[in-house]
Length: 174
Image (cartoon, rainbow, N blue to C red):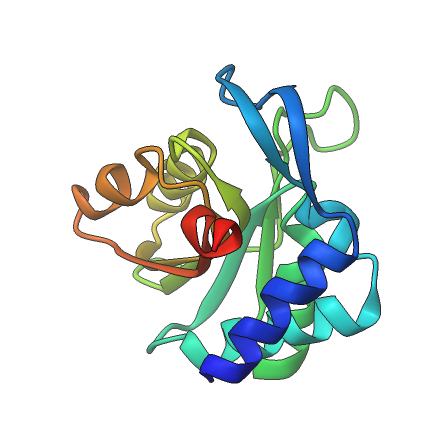
């Protein structure tokens, strides 16, 4: 597994998914490094590798879940590999049709794995965890392609949820 992770690190750098400069992250924080997993996951080789690593890391769950947009390709690929059903939360409820913010269904007591592309503070992941709980499910673990190591792990673990990053920001800087 270590060789595949090292290969992924190199592919992310080669693909331009790791950028240096001045950026504002979705958390509102300023950063001199941007990790663009959305862009990277458009490359089938990188998407396949990330989803393989995630599929190999999944524990005993019955469903996958994510929030639009960055994690959708990853979660879909993991769903195809594991044959686990997937639910997707919209960032905001839509103003037409059924008005739902959930695509798919979560049954009462279902064990769920949340998939995310990049975590910083964990705010986005926590919104999925809260919504899974409101729907009756139980989040057991969070799988993330890259953790920026800026609080997400501590925040998620404080809720009794396992946190499993494939890569960390510090791995990309080595």
